[in-house]
Length: 316
Image 1: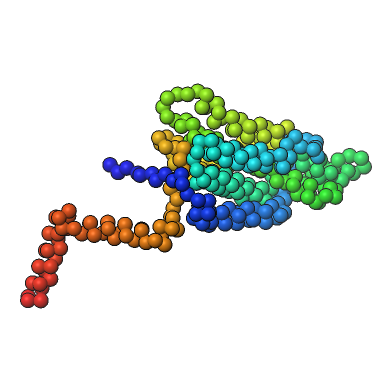
Image 2: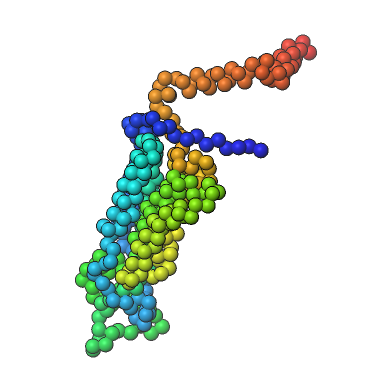
């Protein structure tokens, strides 16, 4: 039976060293974010719709209960500050603070990218789409769908193209995705620091870990109340955000079931050790020990046998 050895990070490591090791991770996060902003500018797929569809007939409300700025503060800035604060109070060191922030930003950027792709490609209408569309009335009455067909955006009189296009980006909920990716990552981070699965059954730990997820759920509910999203948009956004949070957390932290779940993984490489040649010395020592005849008698017999065969071969 083989066991997996988990290497945990050191407490004494400089910020400069950490950044030099994880520089490509930050570059990838930046690239993912740039791709999202590029995709977000693409016009969504225009699906036809029915004027009799009650699910897209809700009123358009310009003022939201929770705008994108407030969502970013609650889902990104607040968890980031809490991660740094907890790491400082528990004296986890620079590596823990860095990996916590990197994992948080990675989770949000991944969820952004997936959400942006789905929004533009699916083109689902928001619950308030018809009010955004402002269909052209005929003799004081709203237009009907063409015979045996559905209506298109050609009947819309909305002067603001952004409002109209945004009305076709209902699936999935971006606010909910961001909330569950950011606050979800913080829940995983908090669970590791509290040793949630230490088999001792502290109920208060469960409440503390679930509190960020409750906040993310309330953010999703506010999107339904504002008629910005259908309930299925919110559920899908929550699942995408949680998946991104789970994936990102386990890139830099071990399983929550381990005894040292509060500590980040060991750094992938240490530039100072590579320059000093310590890794080459260690590898050479291991190789020399593995070829020591006294420690490896079977290997010694094999080498002797091969040498004998080589000497006999030419004589034959």
